[in-house]
Length: 186
Image (cartoon, rainbow, N blue to C red; front, side):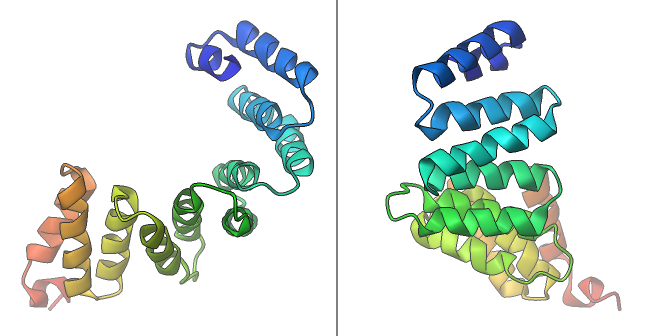
């Protein structure tokens, strides 16, 4: 409920509900990482970090807590640390959506210069859930960037099978439609 109030920009009511949830059951991670998100959204990143870490502590490394903390770290520009938490999330055998964590790892890894793991993370996300347009498009862009044009075309086709075109997909399609010489800058 607190997060819903936050989405409505009702800050006072959101905080009140989140604090109430923490008092009702401080032994579960949900109110801790929800409060972390509240703190992050309201500009209190140090407090947000503490709440996210407490969520991990009380959850004993549950996948959802690790994924949420990784997302926070990625938004904060701590990409390598974020990726490690996304990977920890995938290690939880009870975590129902490891594809989310792998996709988040891929998105965050694309921001790390020299990191070639993003492609692997996107492929892992798709192995868990083939209907992930974000992963398909990101893979298409990465493969295009690496000169793997046929693979990029295939990835883009998969994206378009499950999602309407968007600006990024149309731009990539235009690049893929250029003659090979033009792509090579000849």
